[in-house]
Amino acid sequence: MINVGFIGAGDIASTHAAALAEIDGARLAVVFDRDKERANALAQQVGAKVVTSLDALFSFSGLDIVYILTPPSVHAEQIIAASQAGLPVMCEKPLTLTLVAADRVIAAAKAAGIPLMTGLTHRYHPLSARAREMLHAGELGDLVALWSHRLVTLSVSPTSWLSQRDRSGGMALQYAMHDLDWECWLGGEVSRVAANEIHTQSEIEIEDNLWALLHFRNGASGSVGVSWVAPHAHTERGVIGSQGNLRIIDQQRMVGQLKNGKAIELDLGDDYDWFDVFVRESKDIIDRIAYGQDFSISGEDGRNALEISLAVQRAAITGQMIALPLELATTEESS
Ligand SMILES: NC(=O)c1ccc[n+]([C@@H]2O[C@H](COP(=O)([O-])OP(=O)(O)OC[C@H]3O[C@@H](n4cnc5c(N)ncnc54)[C@H](O)[C@@H]3O)[C@@H](O)[C@H]2O)c1
Image (cartoon, rainbow, N blue to C red; front, side, top):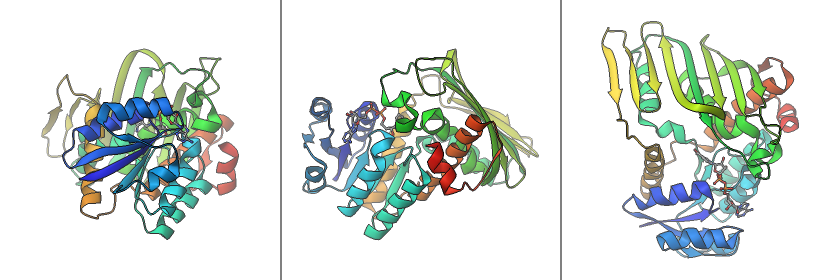
């Protein structure tokens, strides 16, 4: 039995707890949240214990891995503390808010010899992963362009950490990071980005629409568009190759054509539930802990996702084209 400890008992912790409950051989054993009522409520649902400090969590008997499910502004200190306690870490995205902090946590995990995983959940979506396999197997020819659009309605409370750029990283780090990471996972390194952000809700500090154009080093293009003010929700991502193309519609269906002329038609069904990606993610984490393997998505992957997201944010704020890799001083200013 793999024993998991949670730091944070908020929204995403509930989803991870439900996902762990689906996995044989793993259990949520212990929960710490600085809000004890939240910790109690979550722990009661799954029969976990509650502790009232990080130290108590780290010394919990038989603990195998820590999931860090708190706001990003505290990720760095918690990853470093868990590493120093010798515990493997899965930290939700964004890994940290700055590249300097990302380098610090990666170094801390390395020094302690513990594996560090970043929760870039979209990589576990079966169609998003299949698109990558098809592209990398050459079934679409050479990469020409990628796009990812997620348009939803999301109400952001003006008093929440999410609405404050210095605590959340804004929409670029909180939301578009998934789309940017997916495109870089498929397309490789980006040389420069342009972006525009639009604020439609004056009561929140951060943008609620973000649109970006990526230039990949291999010559391909990428675009990302995300909105939190679209009452008609719509999601689509896709790949154009030199000899084929595909698109994934509403995270349920993939259609397109391969370079051999064969049609692509994959359907997860109308009742496909995004919760599936969290089950797949935890199943992978638990298997890797059980077999002593490295995680599939490393701290370095989390740093790369952070770098492209910070570059897009900086491009949107300044209206300038931003070149990568970022200078560390620039990223510190922007976060
Ligand atoms: N992978 C995904 O698709 C996905 C989706 C949503 C959120 N997230 C990420 O998950 C993280 C948490 O988001 P959320 O929506 O669950 O937030 P939340 O506000 O619902 O929950 C955060 C919890 O952390 C607790 N907390 C805050 N500071 C703490 C501290 N210093 N020590 C202990 N507990 C502390 C709060 O009391 C709260 O219960 C964020 O990094 C967010 O970006 C990822």
